[in-house]
Length: 105
Image 1: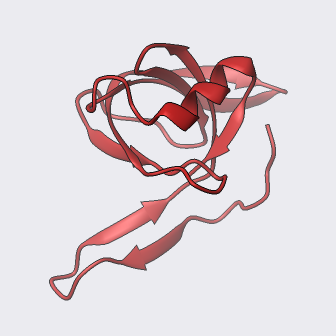
Image 2: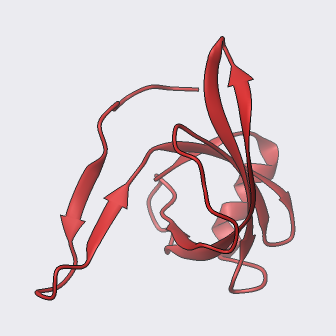
């Protein structure tokens, strides 16, 4: 798992003070509209988040956290999140994740 950034980034979305916290994760597709994500942060079951795949041409994909559990990766504690797309099948270009890991935020 790459560690390009250790600090969270944030972006102001509107004047009412909604904040988006962007995190780098490693993602792989496990089925139609389902993903496994390795993150430094735990997820909350039922929480709705958006995946932005770090390659050109991919639209953001809204997903729901199905489960979150701690795992050890290279001697470090990470969190494995199981996600389900709210769009049903998600964007067609994300299916490249079935051939290997993709980076997303």
